Image (cartoon, rainbow, N blue to C red):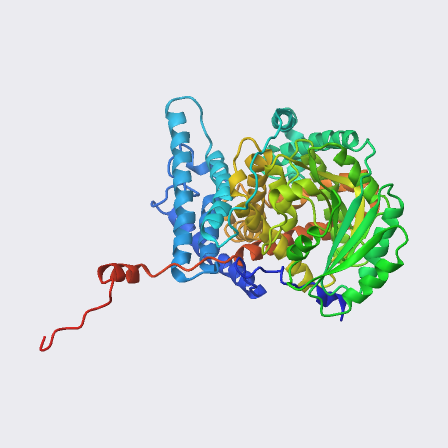
Length: 609
């Protein structure tokens, strides 16, 4: 069987919470969105030219500066919400309820924002520009979208386990102080170096109408990234080599599991403690079990066994293996992952701190031969090689990839093991252990190599599954959301939900901007193409170059054009993920009314009536 055919499993689209919809659904969404955009733009142009809308350029209820609206951003949100409701996987009445919930919340936000801005102006306290009203309402829309999805969709229920989050105050200081400095620095740069800022915008190197959140975000992650590296060095400087269990779930992995097992054996040779390997054959229909038994028997530096799990599912297989393990620390390794020789030694050092429950590393692609490999390299260096280090500075690592994760067995037992039947169980277990009072470490010095998708179909399946998991995680961990004792629940998880909404909107935003700049430019002469391009490619490209050079991978800089294009494709997959969520049907309201009036059914007419 070809390796490319191994990517689908029962974990790809859990039946209760997702449906495998064809790519035509997303394409239909974008075409419908483009058509609705053209219609609303034409209507908007007619209203602006007539007396009905005066000089307004957007859905601004109250403002003293109608004409300063840069683009119809609120109209964009309305069109996006309506299109999403039309294409959501549910019956007609559920889609109507979804549209009403999305638009109703957004309308309330717009009215409140405009009312506050108008009141401040009338009281002489501040003049709030119309564009500020637009930006604030759109930022809130990034939270309205995932909040509504989590409320309406059929998603995992609240996870069991202890709930005693305890983020130390110093973590909040490490978050809020760099954030304040970054905001002040961005404001100073805008005021002191305005000509330079304007030139950067002209060259599409800086997004927005000023440095704003784009520059502030990069200053923030640079500061917290440097702090994170220093904290990682402090955390991993003590030797700690307890006995170790290596757990490998395997479903139809006969073609490559030998390399994985031998890589674990090499890592065991560099590790001072005892290592025992547990391979869980998970309902394989090929020779996985026989191949794994021969490979384990050939190992020199470890002992091991091969277990069997009839019920398919990675989390099911992992929990089956955990019940057989006596060691206090467990390394979870995917059957297509090659562990670095010193990975165990470097990862286990962090567990000298009793508060650490999980450690992850840097999931490098096994090769850089294909375009997907090259894009993945840049993505890994940026996310796991830098941004997760930045999050570690304030104990904000949401989770680490299950391709290679090291767990404290005591923490796993406290939260009841891994959740089954959902996407993102690797991140979910980290969130739940954080809710139990532990913390997660992401150390890019712990390196391992994993297969990347070989086909577009595999890439789409993988990313849709990954991006759908954020909604599973949020629903399964609702108890920790906005809990002030947890920096994960109060800041990181809500930010990730908003970021997922932003990614889902990126492709529609580009379509919307194209209409404005290319077709309806006469109404929005203040909007140029440079800030739009810069938002996608400007600052992200500069950060990517810097990070690749810091990692001493100048070859990765050559892959940046492909990576920037992949960011748009990633938006496409994120939108696809939201469209695979299942929304349970709602009954016909008219039918419900009839049933309430006639609970036992319609009565027959009397004879001769």
